[in-house]
Image 1 (tube, rainbow over the protein chains, first blue to last red):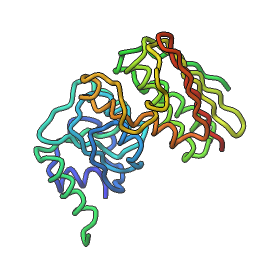
Image 2: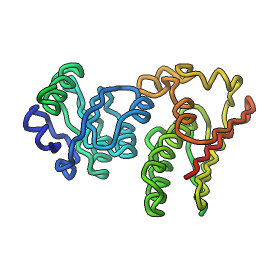
Image 3: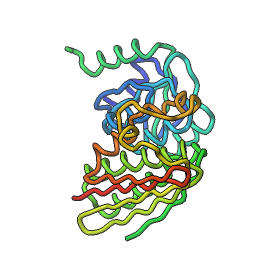
Image 4: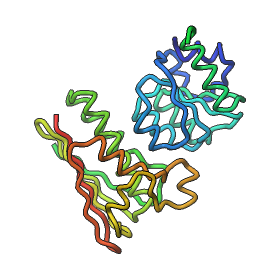
Length: 113
Length: 136
C-alpha cells in the first residue's frame, strides 16, 4: 500500500511533501515523544503525532518514515512544511484523534487483523 | 575520515543537521544500513542534548575501517550525577522542551542501546563530553 492510497482511504489532507506520496507503507507508529519515535519507529512506517514543529521532519527523515500524519485537525508550522518538501516526506492531516486514526490505519494495513 | 560540526545551544531549528549529514556520508561509504541506523539514533540524541541543555558544542566523527567513533563535546552546565542521568525517564529538560516532545528522559538510554561503547564525562559548570563508538 502506498501513502497516496492512505490519503484516499482515510480522507487525509496533504499539507506538503507530495513527492513522497508513492512511498510504500509497511506499518505505523503513534507517539508524541521524539526519543520514543527515534528509538522505535521503523523505516517505511507512517508516524502519527500531535507535534507540529519542524523537528518532527528531522526525526522523520533520519528514520526514513513513509509519511507523518498530524491528528485532531492540527496544522504544521510553515518551516515544518518547508522541510517536508525538502525531504520529500509527505506531511498529512486528519481531523480524527490519534486513537481513531491509528485504529483505521491498522485495519487498512491488516484487513484480517 | 574525520567530520566536524558545530552545534548551537538552544537552536532547535538546526537540531539534527549533523546527524543528517553524517548519515549521508556513512551511506555513501556503503556502511551497513543497520549500523547507520544505530549511529544516527545515538547521534541525534546527543545532538538534541547539546541543543536542549548546553550553550554550544562540537561533534567530531571519525569513520574508520570497521568503526565509527563520535565525540560530542559541549560547553554547558554539565551533569552532576551521571548514573541518575542514565536512568530511563529522568530528565532536567525545561517545560518548553518537554512540550516539543523532547526531554522524556530517553536520550541517554537510547544512546546506550544503539552503540557499542558509550563514555560520558562531565564537569559541572564547564561541560560534558560524550563518546559514542560503533563497530561493524
